Each structure stands twice: as structure tokens, then as C-alpha cells.
Image (cartoon, rainbow, N blue to C red; front, side):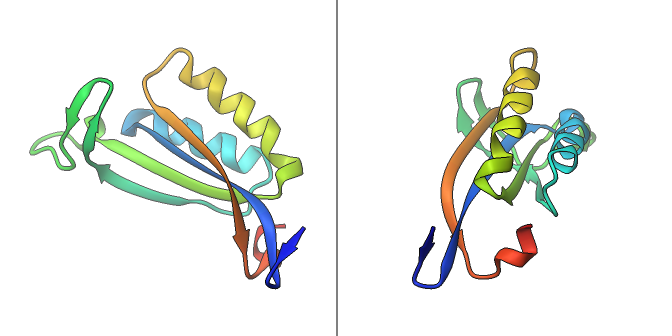
Length: 107
């Protein structure tokens, strides 16, 4: 589907403790995504209270947000795999429809 010469894709945002980020990165690449963005030191407030973006002595305990975009046909397997990982770990996943101007970057 296209909108104003844009191509429909699926966007996943996953916020996890930094120690779980390598497993999420592996799931993303295994799903065939061509890339991801990783944001370290994420801060905010949520289910488990406030999270500081920067820890003085240990970055391992900070939160990391990983963002990827992939064709909708490839997203289901990744969503299932992330849900399974999150069932035994803390973290949250957001899934949304998005539109991209350069679909060849995500194929």
C-alpha cells in the first residue's frame, strides 16, 4: 500500500534493560530486518517506577530502546519472538504502522 508515494511498513520499538539488548538485536537481524537504531540510557517512568537515563557506575543496568522497521509480512515472526523474550524479562514493545520514503532500505 502506498500513501503520497510512501510505502507501508511495520515499526517495532523495544525498551529493555541494556543486558537484554544483544538478544533483541539478534532477533531483529534474524527476522531479516536490514537495520535498527539503538538508543542507550533511555529514561522515563513506567510500570516499575522511574528509570534514570545515566547511571554513575554501571551502564549495564540502564535501559536501551531498539527501533526497527520492516515489511509487514516479515514483522509477525519478530513480534512473536520479542513477546516470548519479554515473557521472562522486563521490557516493553510497541508496534505501529509506519510509512517510509525509501522502501528499498528496508527490503
